[in-house]
Length: 220
Ligand SMILES: [Zn+2]
Image 1 (cartoon, rainbow, N blue to C red):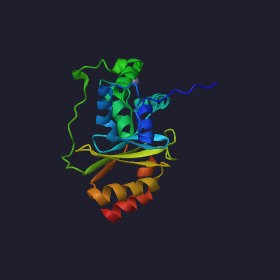
Image 2: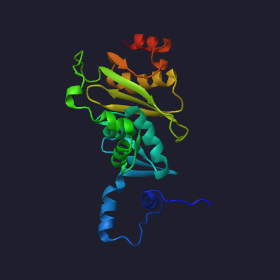
Image 3: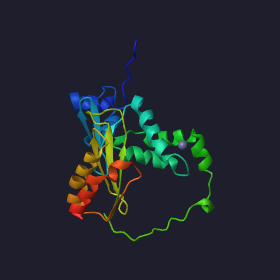
Image 4: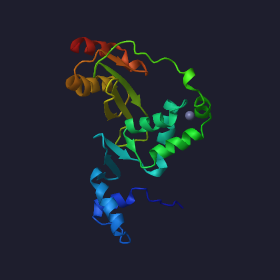
């Protein structure tokens, strides 16, 4: 026998579908609810939130949260700011839930490596001098996140971050090959922000192969 547990956003989804709120709610409950409801939209069976940074993120039900969190924690694990870094990875990957920052914090508290590396003091820090002076949209960091649990057949998210402004561009995608990267660069970066001076990726080979060089040559 399986027990269906209603997700944290069930009242939001219910309202968006039926226009009704729970009858036991007080006037104050309703006020709080209606102040925020405009940020959400429902696309059966997913809820999305239009966040303050104008990026739409998928609202994650409880049973999917720990998988996403631990994936993002693996990338951000260690050091003082691991819990913020973990939560930021989740957000940059297009996911959101209300207790995200708290959950990232408790995950890092329970992680050995985070606890050990978190004890480093300022004196242990590497100098962070920039090598070059770069302008906004000169340098983009590009990476795939994923694979994630499938959402509309998309299991990866390609994320581009401008190094100076921290502006984030992201698209969901089905695969993590170079074709996706080329299209992303053309449509989301070059056409809108101009051709950058550099593209940085900690990731794999899809970023340094032949079609990529040809594209850069064409636009650069
Ligand atoms: Zn950790």
